[in-house]
Length: 221
Image (cartoon, rainbow, N blue to C red; front, side):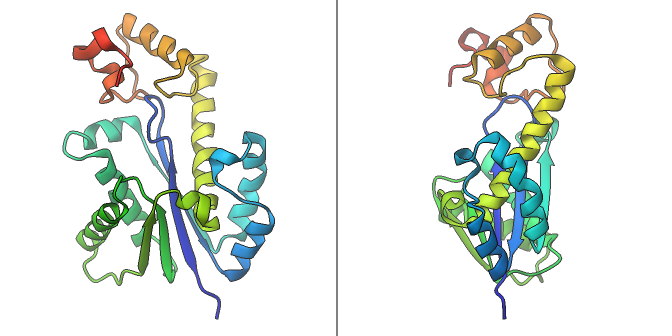
């Protein structure tokens, strides 16, 4: 009997602009081998054009896949009470509880410096959402997106979707860079927004980058 495994990863954790996107991919034995043959790897090691080409194949081969987009507004609201790690753990739990099939194991690229602590947060969020849910084996590891093809696939779906969202914003608002605080284009874009007194909903206002009390050290972390 084929063993189902689920990979979960995110794209856009650090940017000041745009959503944080989380991807989830469930594969069977055949699917894992097929994606390995396609040389599916961590999205950071795959060219943008190649990621776009792989996206439909991943979706077709997967037993199940899903994406969750966490908007900047939702991030800002949740960060009033929770750490970003806990917010991600909440969303991972929601994705797991929303699966149509129950995989034998779930592999997650750890957002926490301590992988076991991230796993503990996820389990807490799952049981809080459904105390009767039978939790499969959960593996929380750093660089899981580089070690497990199901996590690599999830990272590609998440990255392609986030890039798509950034392109939509760019088409409306002009050049805004990658959205990361270290990007010079993004710095200039945010400076101009703040100069005009505008901070639209696609900007994460809870980031140090746009905290008005820290404008003297803008973009310093």
